[in-house]
Length: 322
Ligand SMILES: [Fe+2]
Ligand SMILES: [Fe+2]
Image 1 (cartoon, rainbow, N blue to C red):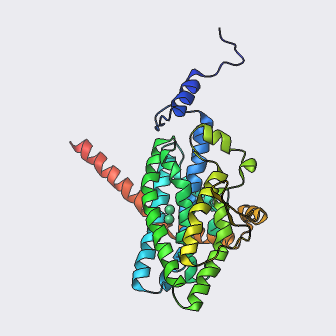
Image 2 (image 1 turned 45 degrees about the vertical axis):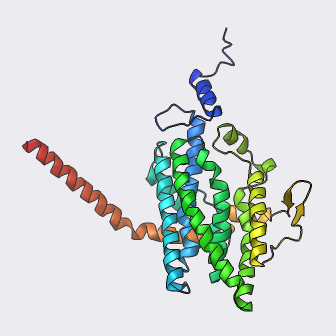
Image 3 (image 1 turned 90 degrees about the vertical axis):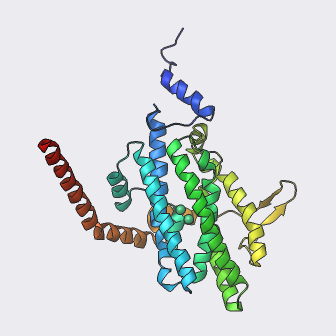
């Protein structure tokens, strides 16, 4: 017998069972509205992060210290544009419109990863971004290759392969600087000092302050908590810093034999909240650059629409003549 007050939509029950048995969800499958909304928000924020993330490094393309470095950096920045495009397409499979997503970004309503609101004053910042920012992105994204929404999971497989290349090119820049002159080593250390804490904050607030996490975990959108992923990143990165001969700017960092993990200090969450609110060092600059790029590209969108319209008219005329 069914109690009218507790009865849930049978489609919802079937969905929950399917997802908890690690089944994947495809665009035409029935899904709860809240699941769809959560995914549109997460995937579009991820897409915006890739697109805005081109800027801090794009800043160094013309100043990269050799042709080889320039080629690698152009390829990397171009990959990030590609990641943005796969992700906008994945969000479109959930019924989101590309224009709405882009408008939300340009109007400052949509969020993107706060890490891209920090400046890149030296060449070593390009090394630190590849090593640490792309490294943190990989830690976040490898579990997303098994996320419950099929198109997102499949996009992540390809994205992660490219991110590994990004991480290596960054680490190699750091290695060369760390083995270079005293001035180069100092430049590498200062870049590590700038990026360390913002990178730890890329995993989001501590679990006890992360209200949406539990539901995303139940839906298998998210597979590990923010704190688990942050710990994983620290454990992987400390030996890499040691190999470079650089020191991580955290006096509380210490191997904990009992836990089998590194203990580490508390990131500056006040700073994080300020950056999220739009008051980071480069928030305004990043959005203004994006708005300008969008305006400068208006003629391309207009031309593409006019071309599509012409083709449609030609096809119509041909089918009438036949
Ligand atoms: Fe990317
Ligand atoms: Fe990347």
